[in-house]
Amino acid sequence: MESHSDSWRQAKLRPVLRQLKPYVAGKGFGEISRKYGLKPETIVKLGSNENPYGPSPKVAQALASISPERYPEPEELIAGIAAYTGFPEEMIIIGAGMDGVMDTLTRLFLEKGDRTFIPTPTFSYYEILTITAGAIPNLAPRGPQFEIASRVPPDTKMAFLCSPNNPTGNVASEEEIAALLESTNSIVFLDEAYVEFADKSLIRLVERYDNLIVGRTLSKAFGLAGMRLGYAVAPRWIADQYRRAAPPFYGISCATVAAGVAALSDLPFMRLSVKKIISERQRLQMVVKAYPSQANFLYLETQQESREFVERFMARGIIIRDCRSFWGAGEHHARVTVGTPSENDRFLSAFQEICK
Image 1 (cartoon, rainbow, N blue to C red):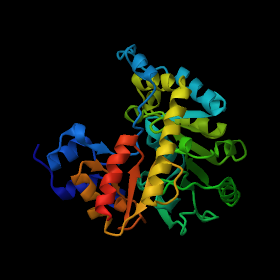
Image 2: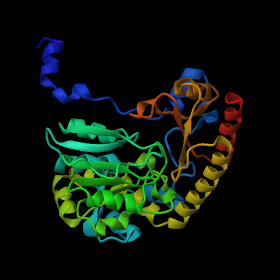
Image 3: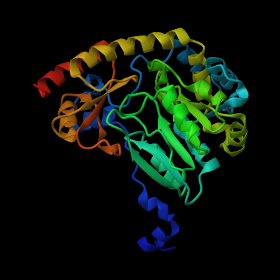
């Protein structure tokens, strides 16, 4: 069969795909090594909000004993998450990263022509999920302190909120979220990916509001970014439907299950990592004068364009994040992950050179 024309191919694809802007991930070691001729081991990666201390040593032990020829059995993992959050197993839903959880949730609720509410700047995958569902994103600018609106627009089917917010690092108060929930009948997804680094979680609000879902991940505080394991606490009526629509085995692997169970069994390790990251966050904050943050990163306003600012760090082997890809962040913001003390020293030395 001969190749078809571009017009034929485009006609086969869903029209909504033309609206999509691909998700932009942080730069990796290989890319920066090739571009600047640097040895990968000399590069400091502070652009993807990973945990520099990694997971508990128990994770490696657990991974060494998996049976990759067997399908995953997630029951022990769900029980571990239930114990960690203090919610019954029936209210726990899991997926391949928090994006996998959100993907299944949007299949439950969003149809063509529905509207979502997304305070920006924030995690861009909310918009991608909205568009692929055929729905319409309402990208609502945050206030001067990155606060969210007190009400959800009346025609909204689903709202996506992030606290601590990525990339700004600020948190929404319980009063703000409760007021917003009182103002709407829409489904509200509260993304708490970074909550272990914050003063307070709002996860208990799920007990009061049957339209609230709180998402979490083991990628950040637990150091399992490479395992792709997310979860959420949801009202039973939503969790029941989620299990009907989720992919087989929730899209996770036996390695993911083993790593998650092991990480959750060693909370002291996780909490020590978090304590060290918060301490370094405070040290960095004092020097760079970034916006207040309750996450494992800082959000900086740059005098020069963020593209040039970030490029100058990259050339020195320090990966930070240009925030132009975040809708509403503009041309003068960068995000810096909190690393180990030595990694942060590298960043601060470059910062002082670049910003003098």
